[in-house]
Amino acid sequence: MHLPNYRDGSIVNLMSTILNAGGVRTRYKPLRILDPAALREATNIVLVVIDGLGYEFLKRHGCGTVLHKHWLGRITSVFPSATATGITTFATGAAPQQHAITGWFMFLKELGTVVRILPFNPRYGGAPLDTTGIAPDSFIGHDTVFQQISAENYCLAPSYLSGSAYTRATSRGASMVSYDSLTDCFTKIAGIAGSNQERKFIYAYWAEFDSLAHDFGTESAPVQAHLKEIDRAVEAFADSIQGSCTTVLITSDHGLVNTKESDRINLREHPELGATLTLPLCGEPRVAYCYVHPSRTARFRQYVRTRLADYCDLYDSRDLIKENFFGLYEPSVKLPDRIGDYALIMKENFVIRDFMEGENEHFLSANHGGVSSKEMYVPLIRMVC
Image (tube, rainbow, N blue to C red):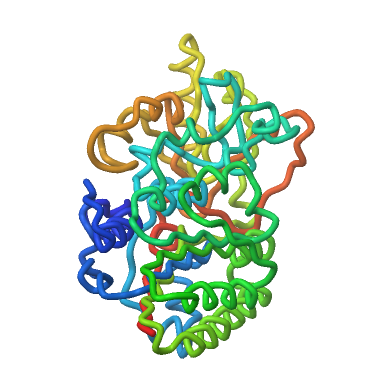
């Protein structure tokens, strides 16, 4: 089991390094491998997050790349090692212990329903909740890094995401810039970096690597080809901004593991287990939060320990907080309600899913959220231009 290193080696600590370089005091320590002093003289700090680019993947397939040439080492994701938790950490500088965004599917007691937090709509479907006047800001409950850093702040996101409720909520305090392609993304970063001599923090998010890995698996030809495309784009971008006093940091929110058909557990095939639950499974296919009917707790525990012991470890969700899976220091008061009564942390490459009425029964070729080294470790790359 590989857990986040919130002391001085996670993406939370990376954000503390950036915030400290901008004069902001943080509770979490800066990264051990990147001192804030190394960033203080930069006119531009650029943080590029490539969704899904794991450290072990880049170590296997990135030999000879610009990314590999400039990496500082590896750091950890957060728990769960997933997009919703990781992206919110990049946006706020806080660990899940504080921002309380705990996975793709979340039970929000405030609304009495399970939501898909990034699209910000009910799990059963329908329009985003902000169309009914419900904004995601209060569910995050934390200032963004852009509201904390005294600089010109920019957030770059693909056009199809830049106007979403969650992107708006997590980019408060920044100028939003949308892009239409990888080349367009880096061209716009370069334009911002060279626009003036004012101190700037520029955050950019790239989603395509993760999407391809989900669809085809990490060892697939499309994913390998896209890594080369990213590397070429980074090299061209770095060449274009030489002499601009820019420090470029490139990392990821998580890596992925491939899941073949025999790794997939469908709750439909375990009706006895499903009968003990009061809500659909929440969290991620690699870390499932279970809301258990109080009168059926013994049945639930017995079933997991006898029928699913080869596939997952069973945790009391409260113990995950005590054992600092989500972070250090005092937890958000909202956190316990968002992680269920028990958590199933999947072993090896196994996943577990349930499907609500009307949902397409579809499993992804690669998944994330778990505590394997492939999911938990991400690269940290630094380029000084």
